Image (cartoon, rainbow, N blue to C red):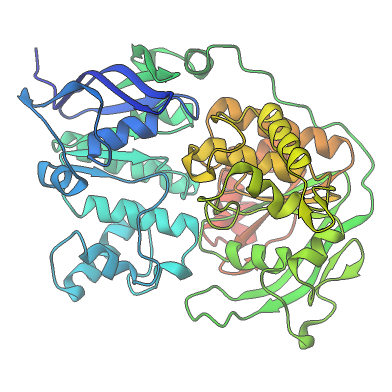
Length: 505
């Protein structure tokens, strides 16, 4: 038998009373693409951190090509030939892309800049090497992480949701590259919640549930329903149907908006026209970095327009271009930002205190003081309704897995009962069971008459959720395309800048 590149036996890790990994056995073969499947909180991220040396196991052994392996730090992991792209990124925001990469990849700045551009072209991961990280969207930051990993020439590459930043046309190109890497001797641990991707690219899959291994399978021999059932331990519910209802009043209207950011690395917006009515879901598609962050900030109130831009953004019929986020929320807006940590939640604060960030108007304050009982009850209800896997309401937000924190933030905003719900990347990094639950809830709210705007890089998600889709490309928003009359390939062409004439060809 072939000696595994990486072999784990009985690996365990606990945090207090929480057993994140329990007696994990895993073999990664040379020249293989191996999937790790599991719900949010199943122990995937902890296991990857143990392999990469970020955390140390409480028990168990590891071997590298049959020799005992003890990874004491990420630097040691990189020396061994292990590279990892984290779910939450590890970049210095005040440095440029190339300066971040110089921290782990030796070489002159000019040489590394050209390598970054070359890899971007080869992988469909274009990013400006001279841009500061703080000016990049979440999707662009993920591209930087992937490129940085590839530049270390790893023997084992750990990828967490690597296709979430790509349009359909570039996913196949990335897969071709991963297969080429595999055939040239690189093994890949591939974490994705897109089960069709797992079936398309992976040779083997290890399934985790509740911190334990529940199976090793060849994903190519199972359909997505089988994989989902093995992963979550139950049957997946059918998608919620979007009921035919009469569209209501305009809850959001943007008219002829032009916006040039002060940040030279940000994306200017041009002639933005957008309308969202009660009882409909409008989806905005596009490759990350085409103006999504700038548009979201303008709608949420994080960016306030100057006086010369009056009568451009309306919420519930009121001109809000000069209003701050609190004033817009008072008109019925709720907002889920794409960046969970830092904008959606404060990682060092408890879930109870994070509830207060946006839910304080729901009588959670009494005479200017926090009503602890009401706030805790609100938090517990959010945890219960949205199946947030956590030790309790006092747990720090940063201690939750990415998917569970996302469920908490989405649930918190929905519990505000808004008239207009704006969600950016609603299921990014969320497992298939939780993603299905979030999407079903959004459609149910739409059926009840709520106006919902969704920005997502997941085309499958937009086609499941949206009544109409618009595409954002280089700061310009396309016309509305009725979802039921549109094919994913048409949206993909808009995403890469094709003209409308070629879309209909």
